[in-house]
Image (cartoon, rainbow, N blue to C red):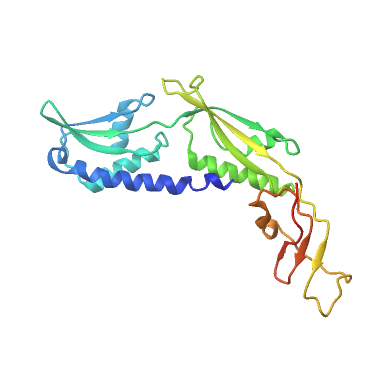
Amino acid sequence: MRQLRFLPALLGAFVAISAARAQDATTGPCATPDSVAFRGQSRIPEADLRADVGIAPKSKINSRILDRAIRDLYATNNFDENIAAVCELVGGKAVLVFNVKERRVLNDVRVTGAEHVSANSVKDRVDLLIGKPINPAQVAKDVARIDSLYQSEGYYLARVKVDTILGGTNVGGGTAEGATLVFHVEEGHRLAISGVDIQGNRALSDRRGHTLHITGADIAHCKNSGQTRLEHLRWTGKRPCCLDEVRR
C-alpha cells in the first residue's frame, strides 16, 4: 500500500516546477499579454479557466501573479501532471498560453479479491465521486483507509493495489476519456501467533502469568517481506520480533 503515498509529494513538486517555468512567461511581450489562451483541455469550458486564472488581457503580470494562477488551476482538481505557462507571438500579438492536461473522470469503482471482508465494506472506504476528476492524492488516502479496515479485522498483512482501466463513457459529459479504478485486495491470512518466547526474564519464569501487549505496529516489520503468517514471537523486553521463519 505504500506505493501510492508519495503522490502528494510529487504533486507539490509539479507545482514548483510549473512556477519556475512560468517566470519566463512574465518577461518581454507577455509582461502585458494581449490575450490569454489554454491548450490541452477538452472537457472544461475555456471561460471557466479564464475565471480560474484571473488574468485579463493587457493586464500587467509578474511571477507571483502567474504562480498564483497556476496554483488556482491545480486547486480545481481538474488537471494532472505539470501545468506550464509560456509566451507565444501570434500575428504580432503576445499570447499567454497555459498548457494543461485534464485528469480522467471516474466512471466506476470496482473491488476484487475481497472475501473475508465484504467488497461493499471495502468500496465504502473509497471516497471518490463518480463523474468527477480522479485525484491521485485521494486514491492514496483511500488505500490507507482500506488498509485500516483490514487491520481492524486482524488482517495486518493485507495488501492493496490500484489499477486503472481507460475508456468507457464519460459520466460527467464532454469529450474527455473516463477511467475505472479497480482496487485489488490480497487479504492474506488473519494474524495467528502460535507461541511467545520471553527472554531476559530472570526474576519470573515463562510460565508465570504475564500480560503481553502485541499491536499491529509490533509485527509491521514482517509485512514488508510479503509474509502472511507469523508463527512465533520472541519477546526481548522492548518489543516482539520474529523468531521462526515465516511461511505462507
